[in-house]
Image (cartoon, rainbow, N blue to C red; front, side, top):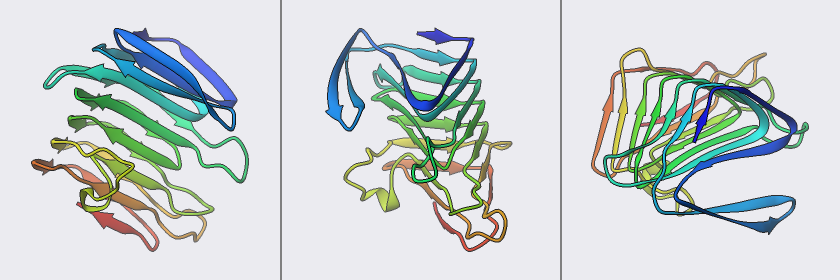
Length: 193
């Protein structure tokens, strides 16, 4: 699957998937559950704007499943919801060279490469970033990566704006984490690498 266009779903959630087989079912609360079977690639070069954005691809070990070079913005549907971006490459590799702008971001896959910008800076409450897993790899709802690389030039922003507390950044890999990038977290923040 390849997206080079602008996709704007303000007030709604959007899901983009790449796989041999895709199964959709209702999850309740107006959400749709996506389950992938097989392999596939997803190339996102365009602009996506929605309340919640989810990119999923079924990949195999060492194969590129998600290549994100565009811009994704998720700012929540209303004051009570969180703008969330999830890139889940399954057993494959997720590469981010573009921009991810939200209040919560999850970058997941067997291998995760970040060379772009992740910005969860907020004025109401601190945003959250999960790259490769959750806190020390112990979050049962967040799958852990085997390898994570955050390259020189990559930037993660979790600033508290307008005197708000800063956010939380979690970087985890079961086998190896390589970090050469920059984390900017102004305000009371929490960073785990």
